[in-house]
Image (cartoon, rainbow, N blue to C red; front, top):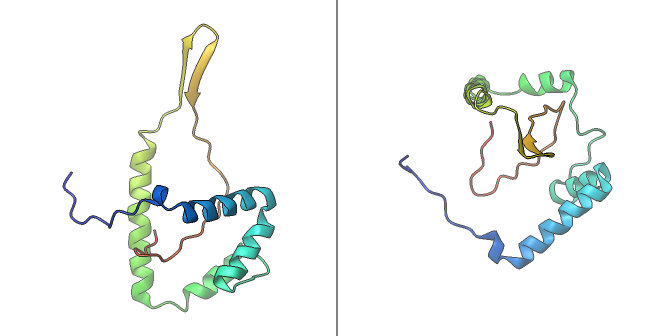
Length: 128
């Protein structure tokens, strides 16, 4: 595959301060769950909603405020992601193999109901 554009190489492994801060935040999130999410949301985004999960009505109210081109572009991006995910899913098959008597290894793909994600703008902001 030919690379059309490459992002700047950034080695986080060499940035001990960033690694230390992120590691601490991840431990805090594991230990304190939504309390930590709420704290970081307030700290970094000055945002402290009643709930981090939007209702169907809240989503619809936000969508109607968007320009039509943004809606079309978002639909286009989402369809690309869906098409790729569908093709990718067909290659991800469960695996279970007994490599020695009594020693079984493998993997399963287990869907989840919902997830949360934090997507900072950074140097290459994009959404899917």
